[in-house]
Length: 631
Image 1 (cartoon, rainbow, N blue to C red):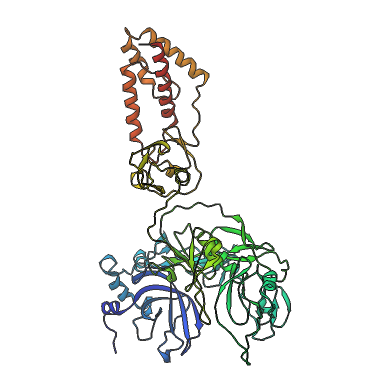
Image 2 (tube, one colour; image 1 turned 135 degrees about the vertical axis):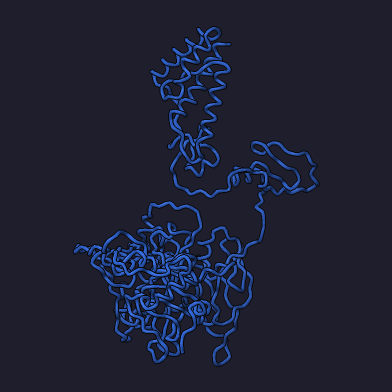
């Protein structure tokens, strides 16, 4: 059976692209074995335009699997199966070199119709030599230079490619068309035997054998044993600070700040019908997931961190221990960053997905985390998706201003969320914590002083009866107050003017023409920038003072009779750094107008020449002195 026309295949396919295979991996499937194929995409004809794609195919041709070979380029037509892109033997997928005619048609009017059989070699950015520029453009490869690609040097500076293979240097990786994952040899992945000889780590977790424990120190052989306590008080004293959920053998409770909090309300009995004797034990410890939580929030900009015992280094978004101190039993890690990457990023939103599954606002914001692909991560693309947390501590850390929270059943509120509703929990309940927010509630204050402290830029406010404005909100309307009136102060933001831009915290000071220092050009807003750096008090040098004094004498002597002569003599020199000769009366107004015109010619984000700033200041200085002399 012949394939339909390429236009029809394009319409039926989920995505169509030309890509180079950088890895083929065997994966298990619920029904049959699969192959996972990773591509470096060179040209996308349909579907999301990404530099990396992963497709799945059956493991052999008998099951309609496509036999992809690593290092070769293909024209790929995929179909959608669940959340995966699949390729079958019956699709129009072929080696790119055998699909030249299809690629030409897919390129359409914008691409070349044919390539002449002329050998004028060019070198592409992928390190490959093409017969001529036409063939390079056919594969959407940018030409680096004319002539054959130069062979790679024998310099040994190993790099690890995204296909987990080590190359002698960057040139060899580029020639193979493989992106560099990180510098140095590819790290070996620890392979442990499937032998079950359990050991208990100092982190309280049971590992299948010593190899599986990795860098975790072994506390003792055998599975970790749960410690049981006869009373709640004994449990809180021994393990309250390290535990986040506990059980008394019947009900499950949350542990908050070392104290047992709300939980299920079941009544349990033994085989004889008597109330079950309580045996308190920890279900989940703070250390479980603490590192993952810290990595999720700090992997982008934290170079080194500590859990209060060992020091960890950030390696591609994961914190790897570089010290190996022993942990005490029931150790509760307190993670903090000890060295931060000195990098300031803009607030523009051009999302990228890191290899840790986190979405970052832009490539700069990803920091130390390698980028998997452009766009939001697949698991965060759902619109209006509410963020949930595994524990209350995690929620409080992420949203410190949250006043009320829910675990999916009960609502917690008050100081440290100690108060809550008392709805019973079902068995095997998994809490999903989220903040309960009051929609569209305006921020109110009890007093005017409290409002000004919280919103110092507020220029207009109301106490729900009168409107206040002016400096420190001292002026107001005079509406009478009802008996027992309780004011609710709030800022009326509609009357506040200013730039809505979001500026970074980068300190790169600039001096505005208003004489004020701003943190950076963005902070200056609509104020024109005089020069870079903090504003300095304008001080005349001795030569400047002598020059100005001499100029004052000349102007005073020729103020009436020789005004035109003075203008002709000094007007040509007023735009220089040193000569600040200013003219009295109408001439000063003309000069000011000229300077103002000059200022308006400069864009807002361009610093003015210092000689113009000094000229402007000299003009003001001279103007004051002439006014003292009288007209």
